[in-house]
Image 1 (cartoon, one colour):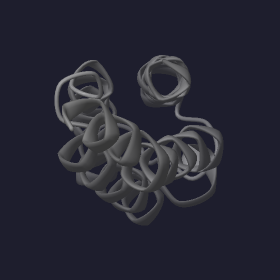
Image 2 (tube, helix red, strand yellow):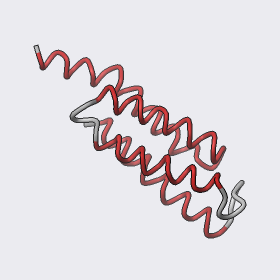
Image 3 (cartoon, one colour):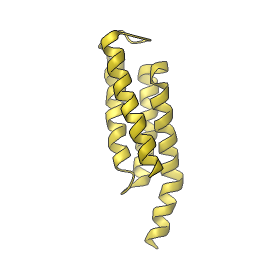
Image 4 (spheres, helix red, strand yellow):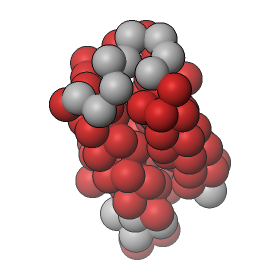
Length: 106
């Protein structure tokens, strides 16, 4: 449950922050470039993986971790809060939540 909430918060922060930075051309954005679209895509895909944490926590953990890294690479410092949230949620989902579901299946 906590991974879902952290992933949801990270995704929403990433989408809102990226859209604001695209419109007002703040921080390191140059407007509508591939950096902006990469960060926006990483946020949307990360939201999808946040919703996937209940059924497949290991896959969702890997996906959120990758989305955090891709967002940090594409948008650098302005994606920092969302990227850290995705990396944290992905680590928790992969290492902790996957053990809980394996124990519940036995």
